[in-house]
Length: 522
Image 1 (cartoon, rainbow, N blue to C red):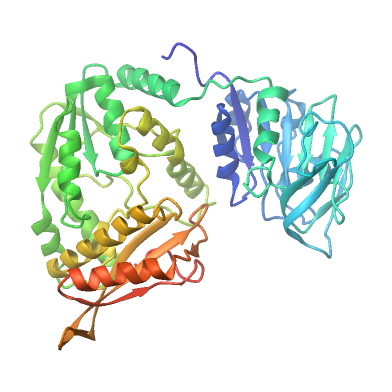
Image 2: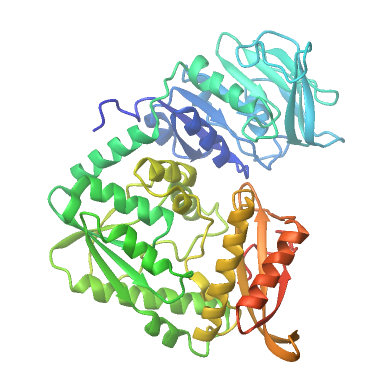
């Protein structure tokens, strides 16, 4: 293992159903400390055996005033470690330790100013208002604490929330009604840092280089001298997985890249150029015709996804059977996938990704799994990708759907449509990069609409296809706003697409938010 055990110091986050619980974990990891998320009602032995040096109770949508609403295990308050309750976490801690919570006629949602009224290690000398001990924070709650438990003091309040921050010095228990994990709480990062490093007494052991060293050691320990197979997509997760495995076991790794014909312009060649020279076995399987045949006559988005998924498994299995002595299958599973799968098993999740990894392989292919990224969030994967030498432009690329352009061509997928879409999307990306807007939006892409519109090209009428540009801004991809790209930029992109691509006569811009629309069209 690595010279320092990067898992020896850790924070446990108990999840009460907040949409931003993962954000708490990401903030703690950014501070440099390992943490994991468990559901509030996880098996008590699991919680105890995790061995946390500090516990954070997340927010959640429930009300502590309702019968049967979620509670933290009482062990949390007897474990002798610092506890921080956020929003619902503050409320359940208050109720469980003898305080009171009641529903409020006034919801507090959005920006608020908390006045700090007492000494507390989380807030001492922190301010957003010069000369005043006040913090700008983000609130999102209806219920509020009306009486705090014995041993606690009031640290901060707002005009409508008398107990916006409370503190028990002897037990090192803290509660805040606001959300320090979101960027709208200006000092939120510093507050969490003080809890994790100062109050819990932990050190910043969790860094990209330490994660790489630890992952390499674990891979070598798990795999030994056996062979490993990886389905390389060219995306961030599988590329970082490939580089970690290559660093750990070199030629014991075989990467199979399946070109499904649904990739962006020149993407297959770029993946080949990046991985073929490395000290690993690289297999390039051009199966574009096979995928197009499988998609013939299919217009329904879900059926397209299933056809693409099945064909991928068939092609990958064919390539796997050509290899001898492979015992392990590597996958780019990341921590949010692990959380989703665990939640799905316990009935607490609404959505599970169906195309993230190589699942459903034929029975004759029995592999053990190696998943070096399963502890990491996407932003951590990107950081270690850069540390491993991947080009930053590739690491910071926007999300791309598993079925590729198969779900960005609306309706039936045809080669003609794909070729037009690839060219239009390349122009859109080029101009976004040139103008600096690529880094300002969370996701941008082009959609091919299988409808024709009349246009005028020189002295002639044209009757060609339509594409839609899509760019959104989001924090968590659960909700998104359309990006307000400058009109002159949109006009320039439209002119380039229509003038340079024979077959497109009209460009539109999608201004739908999520909800009610989804980010992808299919």
